[in-house]
Image (tube, rainbow, N blue to C red; front, top):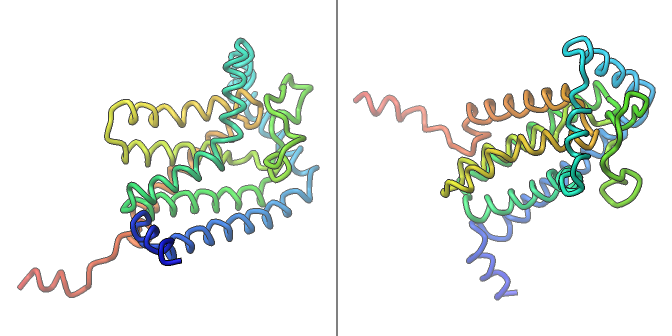
Length: 252
């Protein structure tokens, strides 16, 4: 146990207790997500009705379903189709989890801001799922949508909310990850990679028929709102407010 504690002090910026609290925080959020998911799953008819409304609005706005263009591009290459499916399944749990761990260990001063931005965006997304459950494009094959991933098998498929299309948290989280890792990166190629990451994820969720472009737009809006709020609120950004008397002292 002494060796484990010593290793924690060497590797973990604030020791095992703080690290364990972060893990419990994310587990708590996960179970909250599952509770809200159960609310959204109870009304498939409403979810499909909202999906039809999104399709109708997109056709009114652009006279074209751009998701199908993305699908045709992905279908032109087996490699591109596989990469799109892999990105869809891993851009949330895998990439966010690894990003949280990397920032916690290597850029700890930025961890609170990144964590709180992700939590706020996902909380706003959960509110959207409860208020407006929306069936994704792949549930509307008569409009020409073809699913690019297997939703019927695997642990992630079993845990996923089938009616969590609006807003797209894939889009929101990808933008937050891209912005934070762009700022945290020191090499030009790494900055270029993370600047491109959100755009790639947005393409993938359209190409796999898991989100409408309006879902993506809503997800981008959620991410921007979350980034702005966290940057403006010192407590959320991990900054401490200076004591009130500091300003007075500076005047003396």
